[in-house]
Image 1 (cartoon, rainbow, N blue to C red):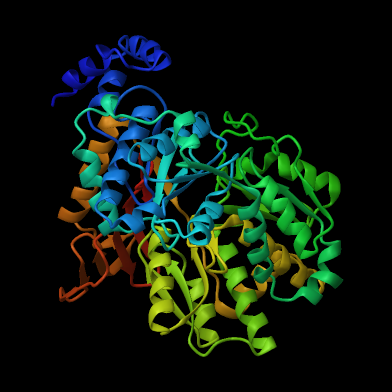
Image 2: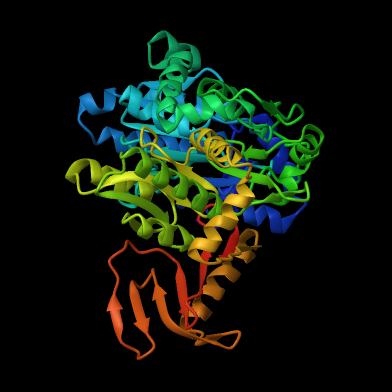
Length: 547
C-alpha cells in the first residue's frame, strides 16, 4: 500500500485516538514529515524498535504498540498451551506514554488469553530481564527508548532466557507483525476486564527484593568496602530515569555510605529537562554531577541512562577537575579489577571468559590474556553476549566473568541477561575503593593499566541522518564502502577487511576467508599499525557510526 493510502486510512478512521487525530491534522501542514510518518513501518533492530512519538506507522503510538504486541501474541499462539500460560513480564521507563504503552501491550495480550505481569511503576531494563527469569515467563516487553532524546519511545522484546530476542525469533516475530494489515483495528481487552480475569497482574516489591538479593553477589571484596568504601565520596545521577530507587538501595546494601544523589536529576522527568541528551556517553550529561562533585570533593561521578542499562563515569584528575571516561576505559578498569581480585582470592576459574562486542577496544583483550582468560568477540547487541552465556551454561565450556560493549553497557553477574547499570554502579564503586586504599583515583588506575599494557585511544563518531532521506543516505554510504573498499586511511595501509554482512574476511594478498558470525551490517578495517576502523549503521537510531 502506498503511504498516501495508509495516511488516509488513519485520517478517516473512526477509532483513532483523539490526541493522535489532532496531531495528524497538524502534520498535514508539513508534507515531508507526513510522508516520513507513513512511508514505512517501524522495524526491529539490534534492540527492538524505537521511534519518535506521534501518529503514523513509522511512529511510536498505541497502535504500533498494539501491532508489535499482536505479532508477539500470534507468535506465542504457535506455542503449546502451557508455554503460552507462562505469560509475559512488562516494565517501562520514565518517558512520555511509557505507562500507557505498557498497559496497551498487556491488554492486547489479554485478548489472546495470555497473562501479563506489569510492574506497578517505572523500573530499569535489567530488572525486566531479571523478572523474565525470576517469574519464568515465556517472554518480556520493555517500554523504553534507552538514552534517545525525549521525543522518542521504544519497545524491546526479551526471550525466556532474559536476553533480548535473538535474530531468528525476532525475524519470526517480525513476520507476524507485518502480516497485520491495519493496526487501527487490533482488538484489545479492557484493563478492568483483564485484571478481573487475572490476565493482568501487578508486580513490584517481590521482584525488587529478589533482584537486590542477587546484587549482593556483585561485590567481590566486602572487607575492602567495609574499610575503605564507606569513606568513598560518590555522586550518582540517574538522569531523570529509572535508576534511583534500585541504585540507591544497591549502594547502601553493599556498604557505601558517602554517596550523594544529584537532587534535580533524581526526579523522573520525561522531558529530561536538565540535559541536552540523557546519554552518559556525552560529557554534557555530567554538568550537574560535576558541579556537585566539585562542591563535595567527590572521588567519582556516575550517571545511568533513563532505563538504567548503560553507565558512564567521570573521575577526579590530579588538578581537581573531572574527566569523563570512555566506555572502553571503564570496561578495562572493571575487567582488570575482577580478574585481579579473583586471582588474589584463588577463585579465578581455569575456563574463565570475558565477552565484548567487535567494535570495542582491544585493551581489555590484552588484560584478559595476561590472566590466561579468553576474550570472545561477538556482534554488537547485548543479545549476542546473552546467547554466549546461555551456551556456557549448557555445555560448561567456559565460565562467564564479565561482558561489555564500548557504548557503556556492562554485565557482571548473569542473573540478568542484558546490560545492567545497577550491577556496574556497585562494581565501579568497589573498583574506586580499591584504588582509594592506595590514595589513587580511577584516573590513576587507568594510567597504571596503560603503563602495563600499552596506550590505547579510541573514538566513536555518530552521524545523525534522520527520516526517509537519512535512511537512504546511510544505505548509500554503506554501498559505497563496499563497492569502493578503502585500501588506506591517513597514509596507513589496510591489511585486512572484514564484512560482517557478506561474512568475508579479505587479507592484503586478496585471499578471502569465510566468517562464521551471524550476518550484520558492519565493516571493519585493520590497519598496518594494528589500529582499526569500523563502520556500522545503528539498529535503533537514525545514525551511522564510525569507530
